[in-house]
Structure formats: structure tokens, C-alpha cells
Amino acid sequence: MSLADLKGYSVPFSPKGTAQIVGGLPWDFGVDILSIQYRTDPDQIRKLLPEPLELSREQPDVAYVWFGDWQGLWAGNSDMLGVNPERTQYTECLIGVRCSYKGVEGHRVVYIWVDKDFSLTRGWFMGFPKKIGSVHMGTRNRFLHALNPSMQACGKGSRYAAYA
Image (tube, rainbow, N blue to C red; front, side, top):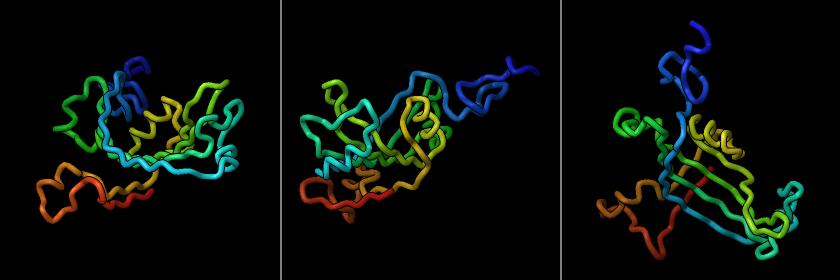
């Protein structure tokens, strides 16, 4: 067997390509996000912006945290939800800040923690600063809350916790 006989979009390569951590494009995603936006000291944000990025002119003091309950598929694995769902589901915590580049407003993702290797690998392909972590969300499986009267309903005044 030669290297040319091995298949896969990412390592580890194998004869059928089934050992790969991440499959090929396109990648499709669905997510429930708990988003927290807050104001902070612009000098602290500036410390997180490498040149040539600058503070946002519109919102120089805005940062945010996202807790996400994700589901993702890649080309050729649409049956994974029924066959191997743990290869499609992951949680993530992202910290981002507002910034600008040559006067154009934008965002910089500063840190991301994920709980699965395939999300980590896929994120590195896309240039995201991901690392393995433990993420917990009190809002997971919100669609089940309506079916369980002992669960808190989602809406105004709801309280949830999340941490990474």
C-alpha cells in the first residue's frame, strides 16, 4: 500500500477515508446560542488586537461571549445523525471583541473552547483559535422544556447558567 492509496480530507488517512477527524466540504451547521454582550475597558480590548487591527470606532468597549450547542455535518455524512450522532454534536464557548481594520468595522474571535476533536480540527482549518475545553449550558435542549412542565420555560425573565 502506498500513501496514494489512503483517503480522507484530514488525518488520520485510511483506505476508505473513514478514520478522518473531519470530512470534506461543504460543512453545514445548526446552533442554539446563548449570547452575552457586555462593555469593558477599551484598553483591555486593545491588548487583544494584533496589528493592524484597531479598536472599533463605533463600539470600542464591546466584547461578547457565546455559548453554543452545535450540530454539524460534512459532505457525505448526512446519515451520521442516525448512525454516529456523537460525531455531529459539540458545545463551544467563544470570546470575541469588536475591532476595525483600515476603518472597516468587524470582530475578532479571541478564544474558543470546544469539547470535540472534530470541531477543534475544523476550526483550525478555518483559522479559529480553538482548544479543547469543557463547556456546559443550562439552555441545552430548550425544545424539550415545553414538553416537561417541571423545566423552566424559555423567555423573558428566564435564568440560565453557562461556563467553560
